[in-house]
Length: 314
Image (tube, rainbow, N blue to C red; front, side, top):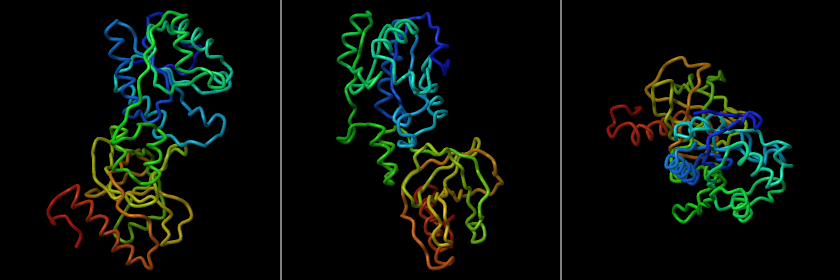
C-alpha cells in the first residue's frame, strides 16, 4: 500500500478504480464502497484508490465544528487493513474550495489517476460550492469515458449508516449500539499521563490518557471497556468526566485496568468502549465513591471476565 499526502505528488500511470469521501469512522457504509472498489479493481487488474481528506471539510470553514470518529492515523491503518492499494489523503484547503467540479474530474481523476471507474455514495458532493454531485458525474463520466457506480445508502435497524449518526450515538453514550454501524467498537487511543492519583489512594488505580482534541469523546459517565496495552488485552472500567466528588475542573479519561498492575506512564494504550454502566455522579464522600467503584468493577467482572464470584471484590 502507498499513501500520498499531496496532490502534486500523484503520478499514476496505471488505470485506477477510485472511491472518494471523508470516510470518518470507516463505517459499514464506507466499507461497502471500499469492498466494491477493491473487487472491481481486481477484476480488471487495476489499482484500487481511496481519495480522502486528512481534515474534515466542514472544519476548514468552521474550525472544530465536527469531531472525528477516528484519527487520521487510525483511518490510514484501517484502510490498509482492508486492502486498498493507494491512499490519497490530502488537506482540505483553499485549493479544494476553488477547484471546479470538471477541473477536479479532468485534472485529478482522469489526468493524474487514470480513472477507469469511480464508485461513490448516493449523496456525494465535491468541488467549489459543492457544485459537483451524482447527476453531474453521470455527464462527466460519459465525457471523459470512465464508468460510474453510485451506491445506495446502507440501512441497519431502519437507520441510514452515516458518520453523523454514529457521532450522535457516541455523544449520547450508546456505545453498545455503535458496533452495529461501525462494524467495530468505538475506541480512543492516547498516551498515559500523570494525574492526581486519587484512585490509587482508595484502591482503584487508573490509567489516564491524553487524546487528540479533534476526536469525539463519549458522553460523561462510567463504561465497561477493553484496554490494549502493547500486545495484551484487558478489561476495565473507564470513567469519563470531571471527578465532581473531588471538585475536578477538567475532563479526564481514566481506566481502572482489571487484573493489571504495571507502570505504563508515557505508553500509548487503546481503550475500547463496550457499554455505558452509569452516568457521572457527585458522591458525598470518598467512602461512597469507593463503594460505587466496587460496584462498577464487579459489574465488569461478572459480565465480561467470569461468571463466578472468584474475582469479585469483597
